[in-house]
Image (cartoon, rainbow, N blue to C red; front, side, top):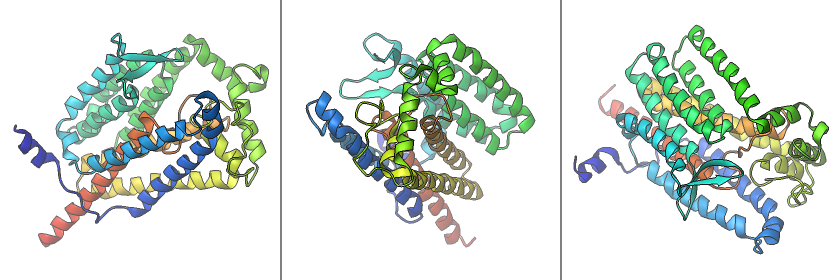
Length: 385
């Protein structure tokens, strides 16, 4: 196929009609909150460690600009591209997950080798690979009965999960598995078929936690962080103190005490705790409401896609909704002491990087799905249906 034919087939100029402005406003609101909180969290820290108070916020703004451009590009691409080339995305999900083990390409940070070093940018490959494999799964269950194709899909998820686990990324593995099971369930998988596999996954997670001492420490400290206040329980205690100091209305923007080297990764893994300390419970509830609105609007989009016989778009919408919501839930639960400590940022709010760029890709995909739903309705009206 000629390049020009490929572009004509898969690239369209998008139209603004049919776009869910409520969803977009919620995305913009969360991104704005993130920009404000990262500025608050990093000014003093950046001045101390980088001799430049605007070091982190400048990089974050670059990621935001890159993300906006990326989302615009993605919104121009037909959703059918990901459906038609699903098997290639499946192959790519494994290739990019394994490529970091090539000497010189993979970058190790804090004992975990899960980043691809491209020189000008460092990419966490699991962020991309889990989306690519879900492209294939979302299309595969359109072509085949979900109950008959579940085993094959589950096998692919297990294989990719093993690779991600070898990168010491338990959180990304959990996010992928939760999203996969959720999609299968809404796609029509019988519950009696799902439960045995879910039980196996839960039972498998136990030895994985016991196998790595640092994971076991996190679970133990989660149960009672005060037993090791200066060690494994330190992060959780610092996070809980931030919530306690913030109260209902917070100490005020920029007034956090915990961000002054007491709360590690306050601009990333514990940014929700920083929001609680500076802006209080009231603003935390606003963040929760915004994420809830986004999830329900995505579910509405998925149902509309299904009604318009855009089955792949419906599956993909559910997938994106689950990815965003589960990551937000894990982050918030870790920050509030409802789950063991896990390095996972708050979507759209935490400091930029691969995850922020992926969120913009999600936004671009959701906009594209909205546009194609509008086009489907417009074509039906023109035909007199």
